[in-house]
Image (spheres, helix red, strand yellow):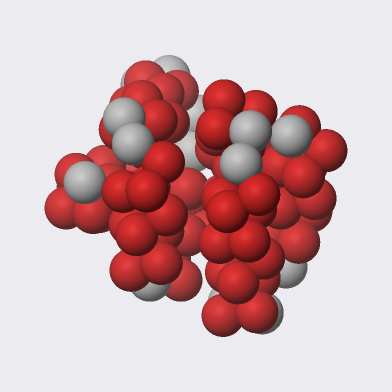
Length: 99
């Protein structure tokens, strides 16, 4: 799972800002993480700051689907782990609201 996410993130970083295929990449990230909550949590815990900055957009959708306090706890730990991602707190708050 981690390798799949890293590959997609790498591709995203190389694409033009307005590339219409980016939405497909973002959907792929969500679908990969939705396969298993426990694996998604493990994966998120292992990703680096750059990858989390790309993946954080999906937190709201994932939280809505998982409906899990354990997932929210994982996201809160990411906020502490990556304080330099300015919008991460907002993405996590959106995920909390979605649950």
